[in-house]
Length: 92
Image (cartoon, rainbow, N blue to C red; front, side, top):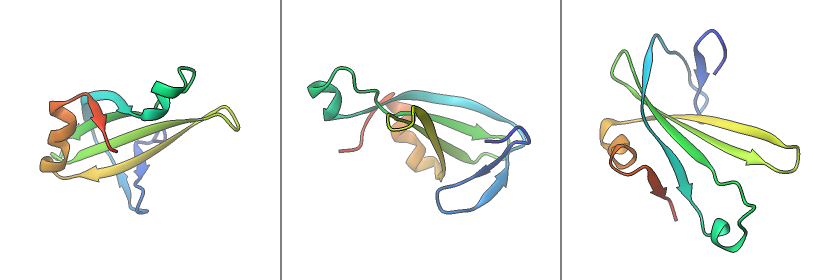
């Protein structure tokens, strides 16, 4: 997200977010953490925008260049429920 509140989703759509509230945040469960406790798991946050749209933000730590990679995806209310109901998401 840039300072102008423009985001680009994983499918390439660009949106300007007027206002939003964070409604869920958590860690994406991974078997890698069980095997390697130095592994930094991916995290997620779900935002609800002023227009009622849900936005999923996923952040991954890249060890190669010690950076964070953040992606955004638009969710339906039904898709957002699994994040809102459980702040430890298992995507395996």
